[in-house]
Amino acid sequence: MTSSPPPPPAVAALPRSLGVFGGVLLTLSCVTPASSLFIVVPPLLQSQGSGAVISLLVAAVLSLGVGLCYAELGTLVPSAGGEYSIVGQVLGRLAGWLVFVISIVSLLVIPPIIALGTADYLGSVLSLDPAVAGCAVMALAVAVGVLDIKSNALITGVFLGLEVLAAGVVTVLGLTHIQQPASTLVHAVVPDGQGGTSPFTLGLLISGLAVAIFTYNGFGTAVYLSEDLRDPRRSVARTVLWSLLAGVLVITVPVIAICLGVASPDQLATGDLVAIVDSWAGSTVGTFVSLCIAAAILNAVIVMVIQNGRVLYASARDRTWPDPVNRALATLHPRWGSPWVATLAIGLPGAVLALTVPISALLGFTGVVVAVIYLLLGVAALAARRGRHRSTGAWRMPLWPLAPVLTTLVLGYTLTQQAGRDLLITLAVLLVGVLYWFLYLRPRSATHWVLSLPADQSVQDGRDGRDDPAGRPDHGSPLPTAATAATVSEKP
Image (cartoon, rainbow, N blue to C red; front, side, top):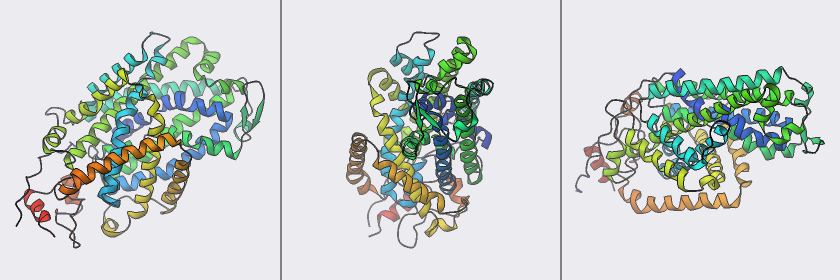
C-alpha cells in the first residue's frame, strides 16, 4: 500500500457578494466600449469606410454565438478559472492545461499593452512618457484590484459611466450633424484618402472581421466572476448576454452616427475620431472625450487585473504549482476577501513590463490566443451535452448546436489567416506548457491539477468527491481530501 500524499493546501472560498448588475458593470468595463470605439474601430473605418458598420453587425452575430457558448459553459462549470477550467472539465485535463498556459501568458501582457496607450489621450492635458504612464496605470489598477469585489464594481461603474457618456456625446453630435445619406450604411463605400471611393466588398468584410470581433471582446469576463456571483447557475448566463448586448449598442450606435455625420468619406480615412468630434463641437469637447478614453483604459486594466488574479487563484486551488506557491496564491485578504497575493503576482510584473519592455509587438500573439480559446470553447460546447455533463443543471443555449458549429468553423478559418510569427510564438508557449505537464504535473496527477469547483457548487450538483465508475477522478468535485487523494493514488 502506498503512503498517503500530503493533504492539499486549505483554500478559502471567494465570498459570493455580487449580483447580475454588478457583474455586468465589471464585465462591460472589460469590454471597455470607449477604448474599443476610439482605438479598435478607427483602423476599421480607415480600411472599410462606412462598411465598418456592416462588419460590426456581422461580428455582433458571431459574438452572440460565442456568447451563447460562454453562457452555457459558464453555468455548467462556474469556476474562477474561466476558460481553462471549462475546457479541462469538458475536454480533459491536458486540454485545460494548455488553455491555461496560453491564457496566463496573454493575461500577463494584455493589460500593460492597453495601459501604454494612456499617454496618447492625456496629451491634450499632460505630457507624459508612455512607459511611465503605462506603469502608473498598472500600479493603480493593482491597488484597486486587491479591494473587495463590491468596491471594484462601484469604482469601475463610475468609470464605465464616463465611457458611456463619451459614447453618448459622439452619438448625439453625429446624429445632429448628419451630412451623409442613410443609404451609405447599406451601400457602403470605402474612401481612398484622395477624394475617391470604392465599393465595399465581401473580401473587405472577411478581412476586417477579426478586428470587428475583437471590438466586442471581453464579455466572457463574466465566467471569471462566477465564484463572486450569487446563484451562478442563473446569473453567469445573464451577465454574459446582457454585457454583450450593452457592448454592441454602446459601440455600434456611435459608429453609425460617425458614418452619417462626417462631411465626407475622406474623414473616415484619417481614422482620427477625436478630430471629427473637434469639427463638430470644438476642441473643448474633444479634450473631454480624450480624457474619457484615458479613464476607459484605466477601467479596462482594473477589470483585467481583477479577473487575472482570480485565474491565478484558481490555478493554486487546483494545485498547479509546488505547494508553498499554491498556499501563497490561494490566500484571501482577511478584510476584503480578494485573492490579493495572486492579484499582486499577476499585476505587478505587468507594471514592470510596461516600463521596461516593448511588449506591443506581442499584440498579434494575443489575437491568436483569443481565437484559439474561442475555438476550443466552441468544441467544448459541442461536447458538453454528453456523459456526466448531460444531467448537470445548467442554462442551455437555444438552437444548439448551431452556435458552436458556426463559431468553430469561422474561428478555424480565422486562425489560418494569422501571421506565421504569431502562430509560432503560440506554438512555443504551448511546447513549454507540454514540458511542464509531462515533467511535473503528470507524475503527480493524483494530487495536482485537480480541476475543482467551489465546494458549495459541487454539493449542489450532488457530487461528493468520489471517483466515477471508470476509475477516473471526478474533476468537477472539490479538491480531494488526504484520504480520497490516497485512494486515487492507489489505483492501478
